[in-house]
Length: 470
Image 1 (cartoon, rainbow, N blue to C red):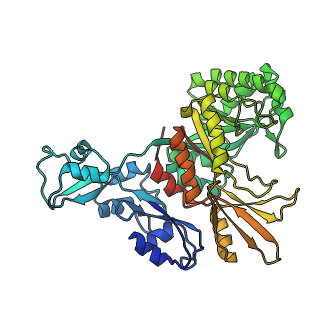
Image 2 (image 1 turned 180 degrees about the vertical axis):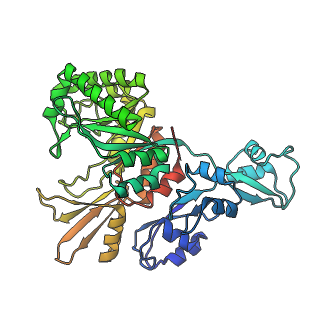
Image 3 (image 1 turned 45 degrees about the vertical axis):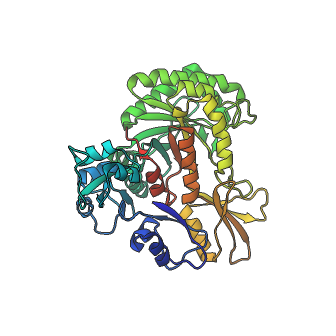
């Protein structure tokens, strides 16, 4: 897979010719609504024709495997497909291996060097007893180069049929699905979600469902609500009992705690609560994680940050989700949602306090559309990456790319004469984030939030990592 940025005067046909790719595959993997209309600056995913295949209408896994000379079982395994009947048009499959025809003068060593693999890998893949006995015209299987293994979490807030279908479609890319949100109450009880169909969809795709627990009430994170629980050990025991009851009933695999805007004076109370949760959930086989604000120092000031003790969370829980997004928040000035330079500042501090293998880096699956000149008190509209490109097409404006933030943006004027500025994510910006995950040696990545169409993200993710299924 490659990423191509559309230049002035380019057509999809011409781009396909340059890469030797199939135009129909490109249309499907990028979900292009009108292939004849491209925007300058638009990022496209280009499948590699001999190693990747985009599912077409009418396809089945057996037929695809036959066409590429691989076994259906190997193809399913390489792509985390648990049910061969659940494949989706537009999704890109990676071949577990591809063919190479030996040319005159080639040796196993030269072929292995060409593809960045070892001679032993070639011998094992092709069951060759003697590395010196190969002949021109002989066909070898070349294994796909190994990728780092990562874990992927996604939060979901949608529990209708569309939400269920989305989890079925995207489940092969996920390790965990966090059901957002179960809210705490002052008496130690918790709110409920009608999420069973979505949880069943997750399990059908071998995704571990997590119960996301928050102090969210009346459309906001409530500091007083958190304090009522964190300052009362007896209530905490009641709360944990109720959590366990729901987790057993709905067959959750773990708990993700997202307490935000906790009073600074409750910092140690929060740590003690986490220890109490872990002591009761671990013996029953559940794992525990937290979501924390994006801090750049241990003593960072502000209600959002002070009670989140990175070092304690890193020691107590199984993993930590860094909420490295919302720099460009709905009530603020136009800005990239997750500028990579700011994300890296958080990571630079986080890895000093939390073991990297416990860190899930947050990433947004959305963008925002602001009215400009920006005025305090106004709110930006949330848009999906796909909708952002649609806006650029509609208003005929080029997409720009900020190299410092590693984020696309553009401006347009609507029918009323109102000017807008849009920041969003594309294949390039996600690649920058995945590069950071690899560079810092992190456990994985955590998306906020499903429900925003972003077709380019998933082949980019798949090209960078092997997704761990637990």
